[in-house]
Image (tube, rainbow, N blue to C red; front, side, top):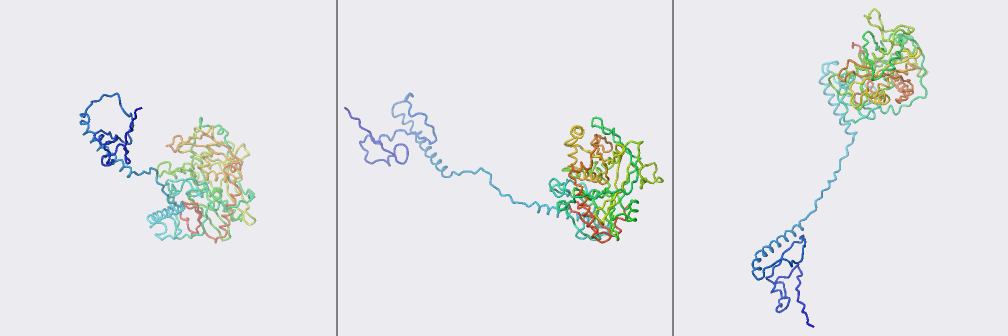
Length: 559
């Protein structure tokens, strides 16, 4: 059997393919695997990333002879150089390869204390107000006197300016119990009255802490009637049928006279004070305001006079902001217009007129009930064709304790079924934005009222407190809207609703015991002071009450 010699295959340890001549074995002559005879054979370079298609092609034609290798020599040499260059580039690329991190760099945010930012902003606002006061009040009022450290800038309007803002309080910005929103949008309101250099700061009261720490008594002071004045008309039942589909135009009671008489100008209260009937004298509007002051947002002020015998008079200034209603005071988006018909001042005047007209329009003539005495503020000689509005003044006394009796003048607006007393108030819609009363008032009246409880919490609480103080059985609330959002002179009544004051107070979380506890706190506070005149005012931009001792002639020259 013939033997088959196995050729010698020289391995190249450093790379693929046959070794070069200089790296091969020196004693290769005559060996089958001598690489010398393969020196001129072509070697096709390849890349590591090349895809192997086939090992050999036996179907393609070829040209025999050395000319084939001669023609390919230059191309092969060029291929070797390109392969070597490409290999070097790849190795260099591998050595210089670096991963790129595409993830976001974790940045540590510096914690900012919100209380510190609020303090900084409050300081900046006070500095701005101080500069305004110095520029505007240098030649007015006090003759250019320097204000002390408790002085605040001069008043800018009835509700302290119309800057953009919102509600506030202990839980939000701007003050008030029902404060909601963010303090960043807090407006720079102005005080309701300018603090003069002759005023002396007595005490500060934090409303947020006061509402939490106030302990409500278990009993409410029992009332007793002293005197009845004025007259009452009967309620017109047709207004129970008013709907948004068949609204009723709100009329202007141009021949009706309304009397927002303060405590010290009331002749009946003055006579009762001379007779020694009580130790504290107040009207229902002022008393209800103090009882629910923790819900307030806008600045306000009340004048308190203490006589040498210890008698207290809770009073208000002429043309005070207490004479006007507020609109959207506790809303997330209160009125922010500085000009036009939707400013804070003009909306308050519009709401007050609507409330007065509504309280008289829903009454009918012909069934009037006269009280013991006529209206104490109506003068027939100076009537000039006017007549007093249907209001009965019910003077009542409440025994706070064995030594303190409160005399309060309350108001009643009408009769229901000839034997029940009622008060009447009106909520008004001025610019429907997200919702329209005309679309919801008939089917979703509860939702409309819930929105109003959020936007006008302080106003509704005051109305409820006044109704409780007056001892009425019914409280009538009307829903009045503009005929057109841009017309603030014409309005329509969309619906009316009766509520029992005690049930409504429970619905709005108004505790009657807490109301009296709040007022008792004010009475005890002023009973400890020396006789004189004091001003109790709410800070414009924070939920703080301040008490100032003022000269006796303060506010006496105001008309």
